[in-house]
Length: 81
Image (cartoon, rainbow, N blue to C red):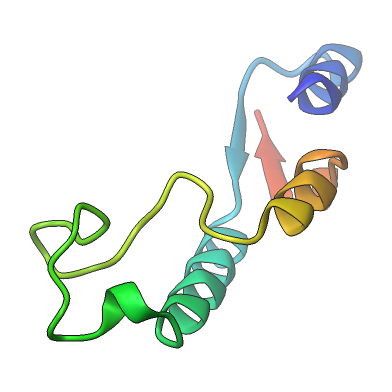
């Protein structure tokens, strides 16, 4: 987050938004990963499944992957305005 804020401040921009294709690719990757896990099995009921049937978690990927993704900022993945 701090890397994103620094980019925003140094660029003189006032807003930042994830590009649609980056957002959609990430969600597709998460859904593909979840499809191989037990809590997406049709027989499972749990708090990870929302009212639309989609499984979600606050840490959708493995903690190592989350740390790797969160420790970098690629301005090309965002629209600064």
